[in-house]
Amino acid sequence: MSILVVGSVAYDGIETPFGKTDRILGGSATYISLTSSYFFDKINLVGVVGNDFEDEDIQKLKDRGVNLEGLQQDESGKTFFWKGKYHFDLNNRDTLDTQLNVFEHFDPVIPESGKKAEIVCLGNIAPALQAKVLDQVEQPKQVIMDTMNFWIEGAREDLVEVLKRVDILIINDSEARELSGLPNLVKAADKIREMGPKTLIIKKGEHGALLFSAEGIFSAPAFPILDIFDPTGAGDTFLGGFAGWLARTHDFSDDNLRRAVIYGSAMASFCVEKFGPERLLNLSPAEIRDRYQEFRTLSLIPVQPDDYK
Ligand code: AMP
Image (cartoon, rainbow, N blue to C red; front, top):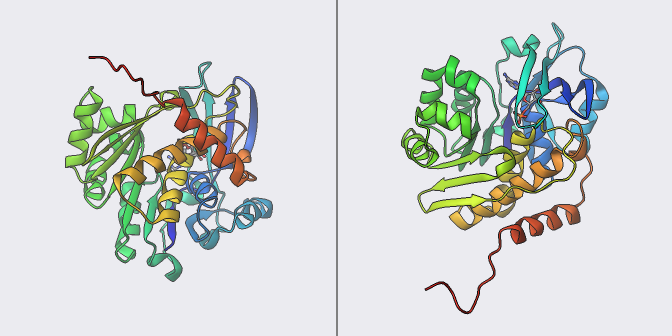
């Protein structure tokens, strides 16, 4: 079993009410790979970086055991750059700058080691590229995909095509509404599941996440964090934790999908505690285990002998 991760590898400029950084390692594939590496040791990253990519950032991925055979180094330009500024409540952000740079001509080539991956994580990139990845892999057990409003608005046809080949879609509430054209999330979920993915996860930022599958609906709580510094990458980190748990357990039952949602949420709750992916570089297994338990107890309803009649 291995996990194939395709997405952006970036430098980000981030401004939150608590601080600012002009340039820090980022990108969807970076967050997904770093996070899933806490659950599973065969992670293949496919992406592209430019001539400005620092060795120390390569080392951060290598230190987590991520296989970088599929990371292309394009000397003709700079690494993808994204800059965002968060509002006071940290739920909303404005994108101030997106420089595609070498990402503009990115053509994902999956190395042999990644073609037999049993879990394919399609990070947030153009749907046409996500389709190109699926053309190259051999019968993955689960294809897990992320996308964003940018593609729902700008590449809808491609997106609808690739969705037919996806098992699990992970998006946020505004994306679910936009993709389905429906304001009610339950109805939106039904409609999206008819488009292809049998399982849909809708993230609701600080309000938790909903899992929709053939077995029904599961509502995961959000973790009440005291110190949120930077929400960048929380969505990708969720995907990394979710996919990592599935790979580790090799169990795709509904019960285990629910556990995976909680592991995804737990990892995202770590991610936001520091700038960029910093917090994801040296977590301990005990920290992850404890956070998972805290999540479980958060919404545990004690059984009472005299239930409401
Ligand atoms: P998230 O906060 O989970 O939405 O992910 C943020 C990460 O997505 C940042 O590290 C960015 O570098 C990356 N990102 C932002 N816009 C794009 C885009 N259009 N395509 C690919 N990656 C992006």
